[in-house]
Length: 78
View 1 (cartoon, rainbow, N blue to C red):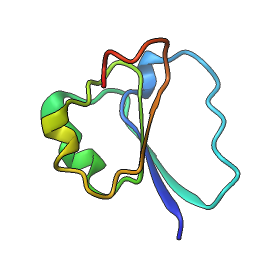
View 2: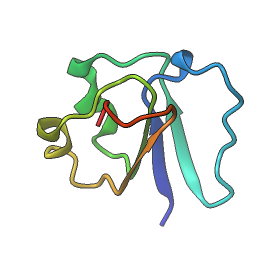
View 3: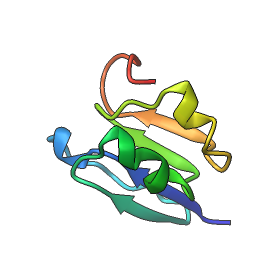
């Protein structure tokens, strides 16, 4: 089964992001507001965030999500 990866705020990271070698689908958004997060991650198995917050109430609505990758130092957005 292919993983579905969603990068919530690609424009906030000025770096080359290498996509994984395993089978996957990829979506990325320049930015994501808190109101858009659940809709954008509803089918995601992997979320990538730099500055877009993922709080407990949001995560509770995302049963398919297996992993969160933070594209920054720290983890205060989770």
